[in-house]
Image 1 (spheres, rainbow, N blue to C red):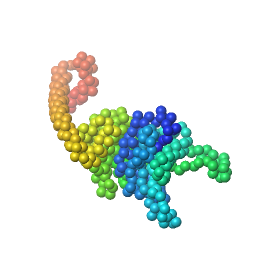
Image 2 (image 1 turned 90 degrees about the horizontal axis):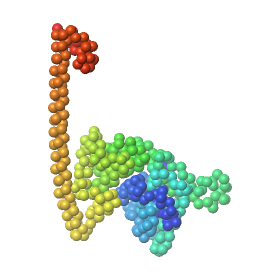
Image 3 (image 1 turned 90 degrees about the vertical axis):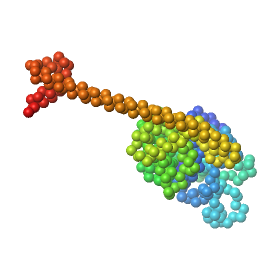
Image 4 (image 1 turned 120 degrees about the vertical axis):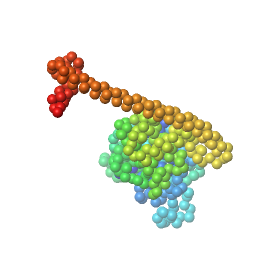
Length: 414
């Protein structure tokens, strides 16, 4: 299974901006929102980090990198996600474990997504990222972080981008290759993982929805068929007893909103069409829970867009000042009224639908009654006149099959 790549671009590397397009890129926008949820970041790291590295990472101390770690402008243009955690000295072998002057060392996880291979060797970015982090660390009088670039790749084809070292490797002996940089990075190539493999990773919870959605991000037809399954993983996540679910509740709501928006854009569907597809699923429990969650979303007025919606949800959930809590409560009350109005309109629409259904049944009954009368009239003509089947068909424009069937019924009548 492949692994993952990188994160924070420096000033001189800002030129490729046209290819990246920031939040205008559906894949980047979706992943940025998802990686704004700490639980997903931790689960992804637990999944992607190699066994020889993971023990040294104190993931209990995982947090977003301080704004001083990388210039904010570079963060927006280049990095999908920058997280850091402490390095656990006690897990190091001797003599490093017992060093009394061991620095306050940390890991820096630079997480980036790519939906297509870059035009240049990937180390160009990796080295720029590292230099940007280290430069900031030195300016802040901080020990340089151990940078681990992580790439999430969801291109149409398998990841096969070479590093600079790979170009020279088969042409030069080790003595010369020693002067060619060979940076390591982790790649999670979603193209190389089967759907069944992703589905079976129960410990990832709702992150399975993210992997599957990104993997098939170039195939609109996939979403139209698999929408219920994608949402079901998030619902299952909330019910799992062996994994930390998406709590508090607003995080699950925000994640479903992110997923819904991504699906809508990639499959060119409206939110109503996405919900309707879910409601057509045979999974009754999942339908009820997703419907409820979307209703709550509308009640809490989370329609402002993905970035603002996520920031607002987190702000309300973590608000400690009394003023901010009161503002949140006022907003909820205001949107509750809108929710009731929406519910009333929904009931009105449902009533109209039932009325239309009743009329359709009435029309169908009349059609059957008319057909029965027609059959009796044609039978009467056959019995009382000497008209042939061909004459009946031609004169009264009757279907040949009907005339033949009625003639057979008369002939076999006891």
